Length: 152
Image (cartoon, rainbow, N blue to C red):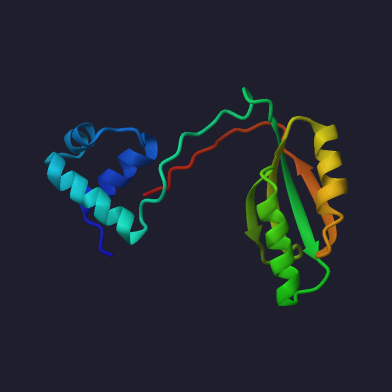
């Protein structure tokens, strides 16, 4: 899909505030509400705009600990990767999962209430998974930047 200037303005605006009304969005990007609505629908249909969500505050919800866990698989057979990815999908504590190049096969971002909760999760869920050979964890000391907005 070819994105024009107005499409990009719509995407930028909605990345910052997904609750904008069609009228407010249209005013912000200099388009009519009907034209803006059609463009938003076209962007959604093309997959450029995905679901609308509200971001929850992990600190206020008792999940202040961010852990980055590298995973090395026992082997690289298709069933092994399928098993790991199935395990990941079962646990809401794992909020991000990336297949990686380099020494580690996967990188997980896990949120927990504290170190003890993470240790329990690591020992009982991750290290007992049939696909996992070993894991290495790094704890975020603080968050200096976080955004869901893409740099467009």
